[in-house]
Image 1 (cartoon, rainbow, N blue to C red):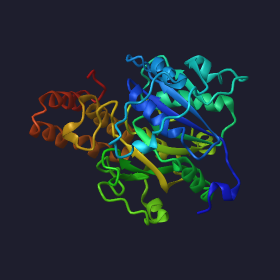
Image 2: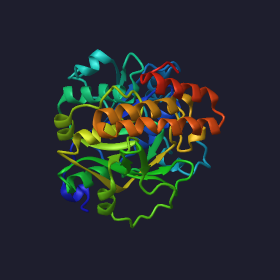
Image 3: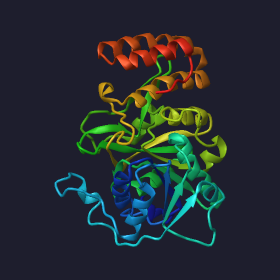
Image 4: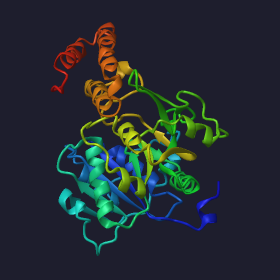
Length: 352
């Protein structure tokens, strides 16, 4: 794979980071992002109506008046330390201003958007994407979770792989666990079984092998995991924005299914991203540790996705909820048994 410098190509990338009551994670992520060796990028932080003064604290960070609390014993501390020189040029927009492209005469490195409500993963990110589309000056968008830190060459590796595979619409990173940085969370993406409505992250829980063949992983990917995905402008123009019906989970699977007729999805192994995994909403690969709201959306949206994209499998996926119910009963999660039973009976969203 040729490097970006060898290709002498450096298209503008907007990096969109969604924040919801997680400013401490977000500023740690930003410290690592601004160390990128890929220079042609702008950062957009979309805040989903946080109640923890996130916007104010992110502004303080950009001004140089607030810094992440990162222990020197942290295994990936070197990705955020030493801290970036401040101030970092920034502007704060409301949703209407942002979706209109902001102030076109103003060129800043960090755009902070107050979305005005908790719009979910797709809705919050879509506000940032609409800002980029209104500006109409980018080649790629990097959707990056706020509970991540990245290696300096993570973005350049993504862009380089994309330029090598023009048919690709989305590219994923090597996702490693923040607390176990030698263990794989996913190699770019996951496989998806529409009959059971279950996904399996590729390479999960294994030691990372830097010699893994990207082309072999490409063949396995059914969708790129949303914690880190580089999306081309062409993909967005052709397929459209993420579906906001899901609120949380299944957005990236839906996007992949909608785009698979036109684009492939690929993997950039040298794009290393360390993920805290669900810091904001309590999602976890260990089902017993998931928050109730995470569990709820994981269940309700498997039905929504199947209905929208794989309707032939809907009756079977619906039937599997009985197994999910008994699983929660086995864990003595009785409040969730009631929740799932209501979903089965009502076949619609309920309050959690």
